[in-house]
Image (cartoon, helix red, strand yellow):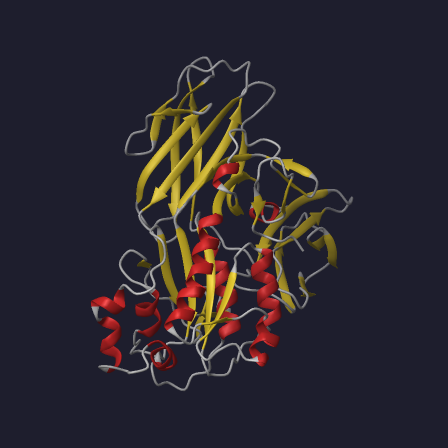
Length: 439
């Protein structure tokens, strides 16, 4: 297209500091303005369509927008990229088929999952009432009076646990279909305060936002944990009875368990470098498989031996891994927390502990820092509040704090894009408090 505006630089991980932003534009584009959260940061008027942009010292969820103009100064194209937020694992559209009178009579879900996970269930609501769907995601709609607006909501659950929702409004004063993106947001809501009416609960940048639903979803806790369990074994099993096999015994496996409905994952702070499809270098931290809290407790989780990493001399990047864990924690619809378990090893991270703590607060992910050797003054100066888990009773106390936090959380589905949804403010009318702290 002659007026296309496309980002060639894609930023998928955590981003801060100066980076080169490269664009591709069509022949009709004579100038290009780049904005970071509506703040102009570069103006380009010729090839190469490239600029070095400083994204600041802090890791912040942001919008990077490029706007193309023709020779008269009129806007002819734009592109948007979200920074420091996760990309959806799956997306879907609701397509409508009209009858002979031009009234929508059927709906069809069309979905895509990045890792080809199977859709295990689909559901459709029309004006709040359930409509049956077949296995292919198709449904016949009830008869609609197009003189009045109608809300069509869809949901798909995949076998990897990911849930995605979309909503559209048709009819009435709407001249065409208006598609509303639904974003899951972490909030706190006491059970006694759950309102029947979810209007006027939250705003973003002063504008009211509608909450479609609030639910107590499963919880996901991501532990950033040194792959060498020596420190954990010394703290939680002073006798070191039978070495690593002690942690595999049934009585140890069920010690200090989190509440049912909680899934646990480990992110190892040992960086692995990859090349993306565009040959850009990326750094990833290897994850474990998710473990159901009903099958294992924290003692088992912290003291297992991870043979593929034990005894290596690779540097540990605790803060960097905690930031990535936060990004993973807001992917999908679940209650969430990141637990950073510090060992005696030094931290070789590129991001500071303070910047990572601020980032997790800005995206609504509670961060718990646990120390197997006790919270020294140096650790407190670096990380702030630190929980001492250097003994079994202290681990139980730290787990109680985590358990209470997760119990107070809910997931609210907000009709907004991810950046807007992270900047929610409570109106105080519904007992709902967003987890994210807008910067």
